[in-house]
Length: 258
Image (cartoon, rainbow, N blue to C red):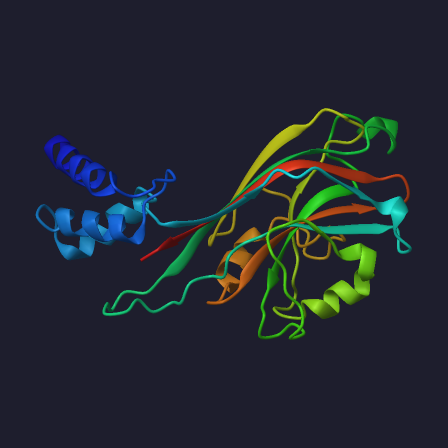
């Protein structure tokens, strides 16, 4: 097995020397790995090996613009900033191949903090009672108004739309909106939170499908729901007077098998 891994590593390194490498394999890398593994394992084991190793191509988007999502600056006292939006999910079919692309995992990294005060004193330093958070939504262009388009720059949705308008802008899928991460209450120290969702439900986590912060503990639904052409949005939120979400940077990585 050691010799197999050495051969595989050397071949992929050589194959990637002339290409820009972002830390994740390309579809070409995956196909090269599959071809090499065919010399050592039967076909039915190869995809299991690649999936176990999470050797998947990745769609990545990141941003480092600082924003302040302030609930007090909105009529509805609910701030809604689209901080990041991913490129579209690639087509499911692979030209000239019987295999299909399939979203396997989404990873969010966020650096942020709340307004540094407020909330119940017993909640300070915890996530309990936090009304400063991140939510993930799906932008399905085929279901949204034809004039609606975004790039990857932060966009203050609450400046032009109220909370009900936002729901109408992104009507599908239903429901649309999953809680990603809350900020620690009454802390002005930026913290980095890393959240990963797969297509499988996580064990031993709090689940609340009716939460005002998005469907809590149900991120696997988003992974399963994505269709070709969909985009994933990372939304910075704050609700109720005095609450803010100070965002410094964030990234999204969408991993898919081929």
